[in-house]
Image 1: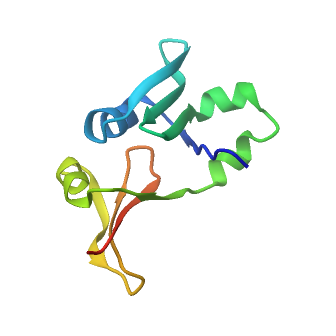
Image 2: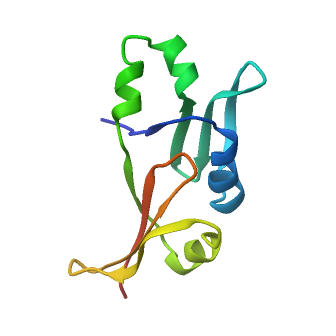
Length: 126
């Protein structure tokens, strides 16, 4: 294996861009319109890549799996080098797990991003 890129299926991409681009610092590398809105985007931040696709776009793209996409829930675990910097960017995010230090030596905080997925940001404790 050489790479793993999550694809998050969402109702609308535009609200998610406020979180991933404006707050978390990702850049939009590819965008595919779906009528007047976006249907698909590829976002990058350093070596990390993330794809967002609307359910409507997936219905057209892979109709046989579109019902499965709606039943799937995602939990992303993201290792970061500076958790305090990330926490500052999360000021408008819905916190679902407050900052904690785990028994396995990680400082973590989890939020629900606008697409409904849970994202845990973690840094090894000093």
